[in-house]
Every structure is written in structure tokens, then in C-alpha cells.
Length: 241
Image 1 (cartoon, one colour):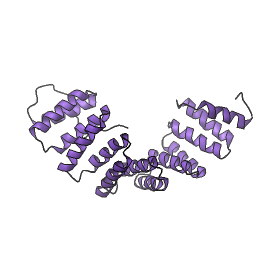
Image 2 (cartoon, helix red, strand yellow):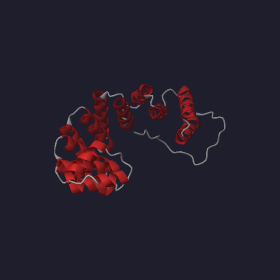
Image 3 (cartoon, one colour):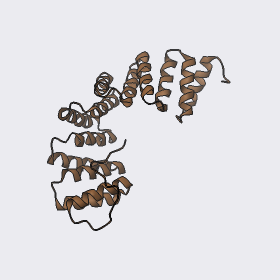
Image 4 (tube, one colour):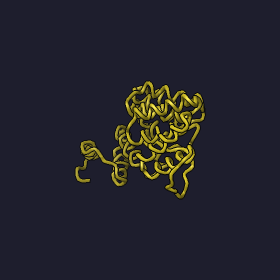
């Protein structure tokens, strides 16, 4: 998971002493883009000190905290951004991501739902809510959300992949194969999609196809479970493939 900074980054960075909210804010964006998170936090904090109602500064500082793995502080900043701007769908979505990282799936689901209420075309929020439902074992609702994300963005390989996994977890291996195939068509380098499609083909006793997918996944750098590989070889009737 990656939190993405808002705003326009300057191509060249002037390291002069900033005096205004705007200067601190843009320095924070630039330092965040460079991976200098400590300085970015300092810049956004200075912007907030000058203007305590700067929702974007709170939001972007929350993104930095999220990228550092400090999810409690990220939640605090996203909450403040929402208090200042209750219509900020991205703040709700990213607070949901932070709650997800704390395994607080109920609160994460609430936040994704709020983001969707604000922006009904927010495909990412549908996809994220689907993941939260899936983490709670609510696969029917997860499938619905992935489908909505796909309707909004038919080129969303991640949504196809996630829906495929949800179908697999429900034992619907044929539909899982269909969705994982679509994910691969959109992103031919998705090693996990090949691997999981291979698992689904195995469940359908299509061992030759399963072997081809698992081999491709391995080529693309996916770690293949050794026990599954042995089981697949035995199913193929050849231990020396």
C-alpha cells in the first residue's frame, strides 16, 4: 500500500527559508516526493502552525505518516482534515487504508462508504471497501464492490484480481479463472495473478494449465509454495518436470 501525495510538485526545489504557508506546503510535497519524510513532516507542521485550518497540510502530513507506518498519527491527521473539510473523499479513503493496516476493518469499511457517498464514482474506494469486506469474510459484498469498481473503470486490473480471489475463496473457481485472466490481459506482468489462476486451474483438475501458470508466475518472480508444486507434479504424474 502506498499513500500518494496531493498537489503539484515543483521540478526544481529551492532550499531557501520558507515564510508562508504555501512555501512550507510545497517544500513538504517536494521533500515527500524525495523520500525525505522527516523534513516533509516538519514542513507540513510549520504550515499548520501558521494556518491551523489548512486541511491539505493535515492530509498530506497524514500521507507521510502512513508511508512511515505510523498509522495512528496518520489517522489523527486525516481526521483533522475531515473536520476542516467534511467533503474530502480522499481523506476518508486514506483514513480507511490506515484503519485497514491496524486491522480495524469495521472503521475502514465506514470510511470507504463515506468516500463513496461523497464520490459515487470513486473506483478505488469501492476496491478498498471490497478488500475490507473480504478481510472480514464477507465475500458476497466484497464481490459486489469489486464489480462496481470494474464498472467505473473497466481497465482496473487490481479489481479484477481481487474479485477473482473473492470468487476463489467462495469455491467458484471458473469465475476466478475468468477474472484472473482479465487481470493478466490488462497487466501481463502480474505474477500473483498467474499463480492464483494456476491454483484455481488445479482445483478444476486442469493440471497442465495449472503447471503453465505456476511456471509463468515463477518466471515473473512469484514465490511458489513448494508443497503445492510437489502436489501438482504428482497430479501430473511426473516428478521430474
